[in-house]
Image (cartoon, rainbow, N blue to C red; front, side, top):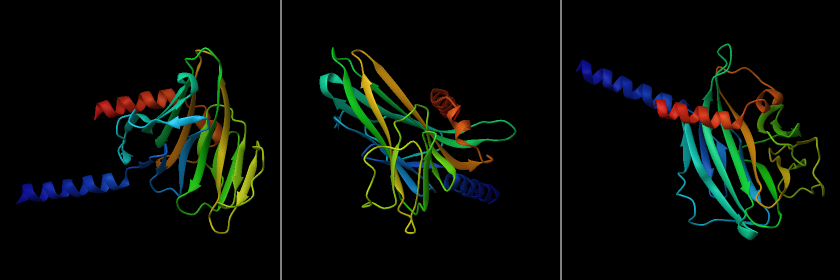
Length: 240
């Protein structure tokens, strides 16, 4: 009886821990929506087509410490390709400042003998209510909190307060929108031109707001290495 009771308690604790763990819900388009957050992120390429059957099957969600590569792949003219990788990691900071982070890595390559150009739009759309959205320092902020930080300079962002709102023709370096209906959304724009044989990798950090973390600014997250976060996630996954 005692063994049964202990086993039941352990099962309950495991369920509670699992329910409290962050997770990323993946979408077929090539992106994710963090659990307990009111937004989703999607990666969209101009002049490139999503590959069908080229990548292994993607599960519906990433939970706990995870690494998934590739999440999505795209193909372009002359053999150009793009790949999206994701990881979920408990990043160990200083002074008990542990924090769950999601990191995304977009790798674009051009093996052709001529230059290849494409535009990557990294879109944030509401899955709940996003009342206030800002873009500055190549990062999205919701109500002043950094939610997606790019490690590569962008060409700016286009924000709107609803799906059908008029939008500026060119991206802006700093912009802010508000929506009484919680429908704020936006796209960070990267115009990419790769020389023959060139590759480029863009990294993104998404703080998940779980753990013992205190509030941090955009510069703190940009100082993190996305490659180091992927390596840290691999180590944590192997340890378990």
